[in-house]
Structures are given as structure tokens and as C-alpha cells.
Image (cartoon, rainbow, N blue to C red; front, side, top):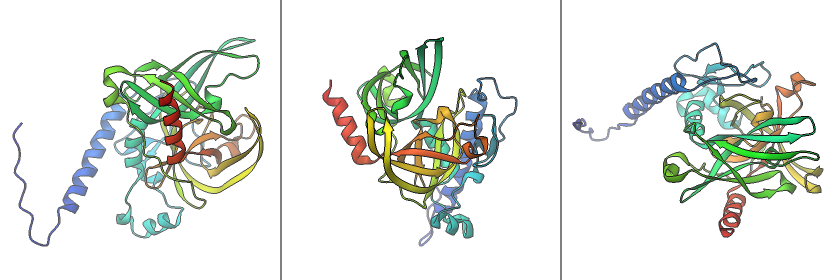
Length: 316
């Protein structure tokens, strides 16, 4: 391949506009390629009949119906509700991190988790989501919600597996289970391709009420990673019965459209940093309107992730 000489930069000038335009063109091309290669399925695992146009991404909007095959222009998910988002709405050129960028980033960081569960009624399948938090040698560590990988009374988890961003599925082992806070860490041995496949997310600090961002994950039994724009309404602490008994629990309360399989998926802030994990929301079969608008999450901070990773590494 021959190097193409760059035009000399004029004194006092800037290549920023040209580079920004090239970046946008490259990202659109990449999205188009992803849409062509990725198998998209609805909430029951059936292939989607529609196709995404260039610049469109799989998205669930708060308050709107979705069967798992909905797509929308990436700009519909751009943060507009927070103070910074409202400023961006007045001057779109001021945006530093948008939904299209988040989608491409999350494709490398979000994973799908499958479990085979033995119940009194027979063998069943459970699905959740997770986010990559650490890479160590041939091992990849993934954070998820504790209830995604924990057996409930009268059930037994027979096997757990993780579909990594490259589409390959690997057996997974629970290495840490923080039952009191509904968080867990899985380990996946990816092998020699770990450097390419295991891309840890950037972890932010405590989530803040009034800010906005996105959640990503694999709702219900879909194989499609969906983006859900959100706004954090409150970060509250209350007494709650958990898998570890009665505890004081801190929850993120959001306006966002998620479903069961989103549990354990990352909650991103406006800068593309993970600040929490999806916990759940109203049952869509019982309260469909609320389920399309209300989501709760568990905070995830850099300090907490470092603590989890250190504890897992000391086990080896």
C-alpha cells in the first residue's frame, strides 16, 4: 500500500474539520458493514424482516413499542435531556460523543450471557447481558447482574456461556458474586485472541441524577444488541430484600426502555463511560406502558471494579 502525502497544514489553520468529516464517513461505512454481517433477531429469536439503512442502529426509545427489530437514525438517541444535552440541541456541532460513536464502542464491550437452567418443569434457557471490565493474559473478565448468573430456589444452573463481540461463544465461570448488591464477575478463557476480542470498557464514577446517556444489551431472547437512550431521574438508597438478605441498596432510577435480557448490561454516561449495570424494571406482560419507560440499575464505579478485579486475580 502506498502512503498518500498529506497536504501541508497552513499556518494558523486546522485539520480538525477535514478529520471530523473523514471520521464520520468511516463510521457510517463501518455501521453499514456491521448491519450487513450481523444477524438481527426479535425478542423471540426469529430473524428480523426489516433492514437498517446506513446511519441507522437497533434502538429502543422510552415510551415506544419495540419487537426487538426496531431501528432508528443514530441521531435520535443523541443526548438531549441533560443540561449539556440541551446545550448540544442549540449547537449540534458542540457534541463530543454521540449515539453512533457509543454504538460502535459498545459493540466491542457488551456481551450476551446464556444460561441453561434446570427447573422443576424441565430445562429452560435464561439470557442476560454484561460488560467487559478487564483483560489478563488469555482471560477476559465480565461484570453482570448477580441474578443473571445465580440459581433461584428449586433451580440449578447447568451451564453458563458468553457470546463475545466477535460472535464466538465461550464457557463462562462465576468468579465473584456480590449478592448483596446484585453484581457478579464472570471469567471467560478466550485464548490467543483475547487481545483482539476482550476490550475493557472505561469505568466512570458515581452516576448523577439529571444526567443522560445510554444503556446497551440483548433484550429478552434477541441476538441483537440494542441501544436505549436514558436519563437518570434519581440515585437513591433504601432497604430491600436481596439474594443476601435484607440490605441497604443503592439504585439508579432511569427513564429508559429495556427488557429482561438487558439485565447486567452497561449503563453509559454522556462520555461513554460505564457508571452502572441494568438491574430490571416492570414486567412488560403486566405493565407494558411502565416497562417501556422505567428501568433501574446498580451503580458501578472505577473503585468498585478495581476491587473486584483484584479479588478475582488473587484467586489464581
